[in-house]
Image (cartoon, rainbow, N blue to C red; front, side):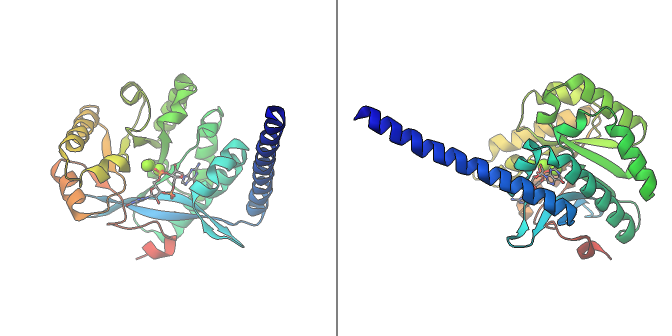
Length: 271
Ligand code: C2E
Ligand code: MG
Ligand code: MG
Ligand code: MG
């Protein structure tokens, strides 16, 4: 009986596994098709200078205009795109389109940031490819900031450092994204050439809670550390006026979030 039960369980497990694999394969082929049919679109979220609320930049965030399922967010497809390696082709398409849209629609000199997956940083020619793209589009390197997470630094911090150094020499800045959620933040911060640091939304949302003492202390420490290292700080996910006020009072330079502006197609931000 036990044997029977065992077999049955195994069958159930097997089916679930097989279904999962079929889903992943189906998704991969859909992603390929989406790439061919240009179904990916950058949404832009403004980044504000706290205090005078001047827009200083925009973060490009990928969206998938799926013909059947509607507008999809990265949480619904980026993981599979990364695991299959398709994220590289998807991202390049998105980077290029984001830069073009910025040049076409946004006058003045706000910067653009985009999220760079770990895979990109393994290519020794990533920096050259970025610079060629900027030249082709006519966007100054000083207007681009790459966002990388601590996770992307883990594989090979030395080669990532060399890459970010070369980019910085060419004028392209880097921001450490989701700060505080990964590992070894401190060592990365002082040894890598970051121009900006983004405080993760998790800390910002805590600023509102009744027991806000701790998160205020953590945010104050992050700000002190960043400023001592000459790194500017962007707070992510500002949703309330009181979070905004607290961050401003604590000396945080920049912020983004639903309170200030949600991600939207570029036309939304055209003056
Ligand atoms: P991230 O870079 O940390 O982006 C911030 C996320 O927070 C975005 O989610 C944004 O829409 C959301 N957000 C902004 N303001 C608020 C707020 O006030 N409240 C809340 N609750 N959320 C807010 P999104 O667009 O779903 O992107 C999720 C993640 O997907 C990004 O996290 C980034 O890691 C990744 N991603 C986005 N675009 C790309 C891309 O083009 N390429 C790659 N490789 N990854 C991307
Ligand atoms: Mg980001
Ligand atoms: Mg982030
Ligand atoms: Mg985040």
